[in-house]
Length: 184
Image (cartoon, rainbow, N blue to C red; front, side):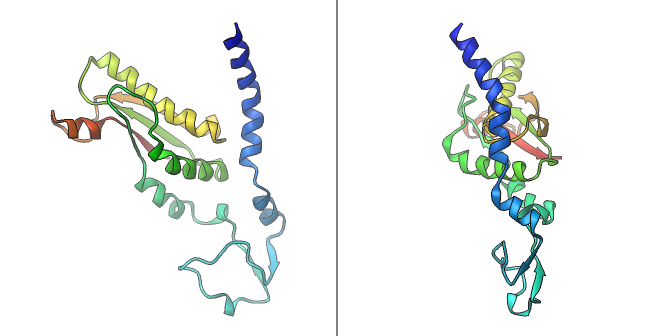
């Protein structure tokens, strides 16, 4: 009975938490004031030109206005989350990557992802499909807990059907126990 009440409270407060965690005051300032007087709202990167040639009134480009494909490159390179044998808990070493991804998805609400759940080939097909689903859902729940919208995330389980590497060694099994984040 108590767990049912707790579940209802969580489900009622989740949308409110999502709304607050995705709204950043700095983004509002940049959106409300696109023109700045010799003040840049984002630090220059190595690809930007020096500000010495900037006109007196320059247009600042916020994080969300830059080329999304260019911003996705680091996330596409770090799109794998590995799991221990017979487990679907996310290892803490993947937390920073997932936190960065959650911030990106909150800043880009139109960006959608697919989370694939995979397993090694030990066990029955039904068991592995279920375990792959749990792995994909654990990543989804982690991202949702950081404020990402449910509409941005889809999941699928491939179980052992799409191995990263074929073989019957522990090192091969470890590469196949994963979730893959696909950007759409």
